[in-house]
Image 1 (tube, rainbow, N blue to C red):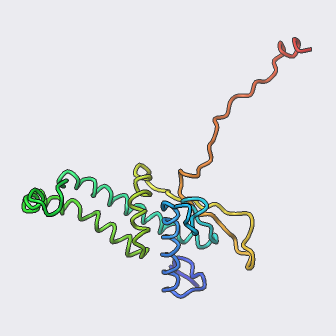
Image 2: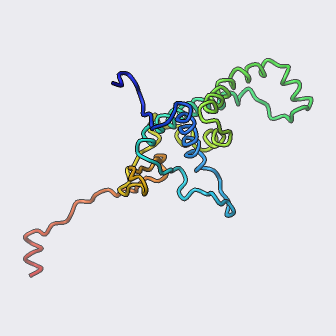
Image 3: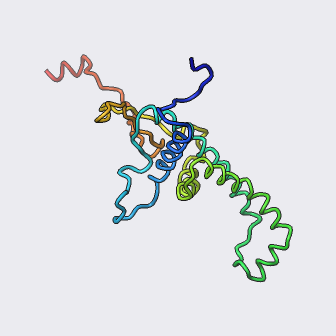
Length: 196
């Protein structure tokens, strides 16, 4: 029995499973990178990966946790801007700011943001993915309280082992556009008489 054993094993050892999850979480963040024409590995649809349903269900909480940590880190980085300076590093103005009390306030205000970046990096182990998360993905979800991803089951199973496939994607970018339903105009007795 698996009492109190959370999560799927997926036929892997714990270290292999942890590495798999980290790679897949960084893969969904890397689909948002800026691509060029010469990029041979450019994603077909940004913000979307296709995997098995079981893996998608295991990865989704990790993706959401990373985005939540990044959102909190961005708030800290924004609050530190008021104590910062625009002086060039090494200049006299910068050296005076460095010795002032506002530098200490800047460091204290910025430290939760740096801690957030380090926490995310410890989970996914990809500097480029962390940078994309903090630069593009987290600001997009700054007003959203949660539920940053969705899982859509695909009808066609995977060739070879008949595994159930699913799409894991970010909410908002690839949403379907819904039109507001209008009330249908039914024929009334007057229009039916006039039409005949």
